[in-house]
Length: 325
Image 1 (cartoon, one colour):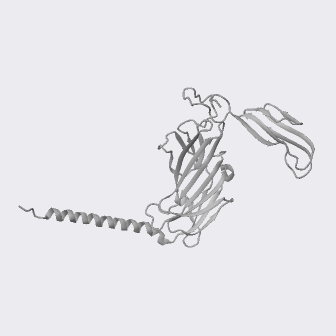
Image 2 (cartoon, one colour; image 1 turned 90 degrees about the vertical axis):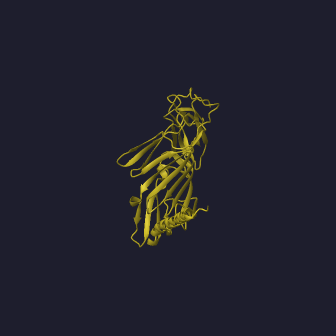
Image 3 (cartoon, helix red, strand yellow; image 1 turned 30 degrees about the vertical axis):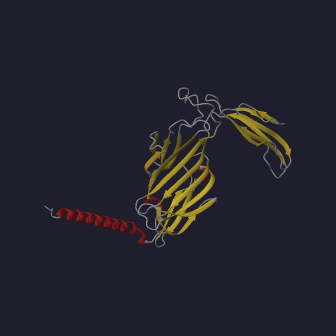
């Protein structure tokens, strides 16, 4: 479609509520309150109005009665869709919990025909472009950021309320029909608020939100991962719904000696208001594991000082040799 045209959406459904039983009366109503309907399948008993389309009332409907219909409507609003979302959480008993999210977004309306003109673009008349997204984040987050492949994106705003942080972002450009964009956002959470002792010796429990925070936007491919502290064992996961796949990996981060366990969970078609549940992970972390990082730091410092001492000795020896006449 051209830039100043109004997008159209075709809805495919059924005129009947498919039932295993004979039904005395049945009526289906499709409300199109925002932009109104343009065209709909005409069958006996159909009534199309400006704001809605009604099929029925049907009487004495036989079991499994079905008839496919379509409704064509104007949709003067963006249709954002996440083709991919990756939500990665890294747990540390030394600092804070790191949350990093990667988003690939597409405006799922008819593709723009021809080139884009910034001069001709008017955000007051062209309302189908994705220009802004809002979400709510935990109230106790710190070091919030919003970046892409180029670097930091300054068109964002965060307001800390009494219960959450309202985060608003704007892409670098208006995302027109068929266009795509990518960004990363992340923050830190205080470990004392989320990592709890279970009461068993050296056993801990952490509970974090599974879904992405953007309401009413479906994520087609969603990946949720938790990286545990180095030395964590006896891991147990409590997931509120079924996953397509759960994998375990070993990853290395700063000053790691043996590597960390990373749990990767994948699922399709995630929606925030449906899948906004908590994933609970329980694990054992021996007290000796807390000493790995300090010991590694001490060893590295000792090696560094040793080499500096050797360099200083070599420099001193070369400077103290007598010059030959």
